[in-house]
Image (tube, rainbow, N blue to C red; front, side, top):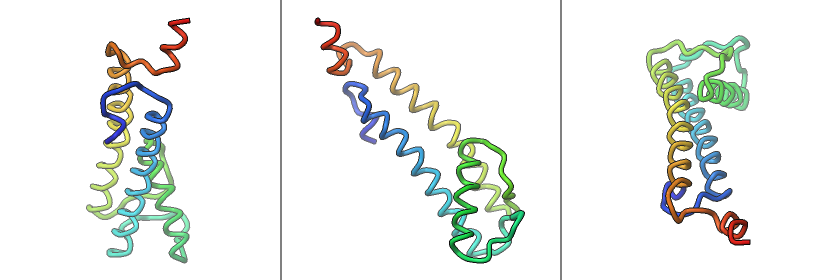
Length: 123
């Protein structure tokens, strides 16, 4: 990924990390939708979605609850749904930790300060 390349830690680089995290949530929501459509009943809902747009909405909500380790009201029932949920929860914890660690490590390297930081120190 571009955000892990060498160079200064910039606002754009941090925005890229946040964007990648949000895209992970959407990708998992698509995976959950595929599972539910292939094997109906893989997830238990408090209110059953009656249309495809409701299903997508509920599974997107569930994905971000799982990614951020919040408790939602959708429950994975089938083994594949549970496995995907566990994998997303693990990625949801590891991605921010690795991203923050990498950005801090890059910021601590000599010669990788952002141009605005260099201008402040030279004044």
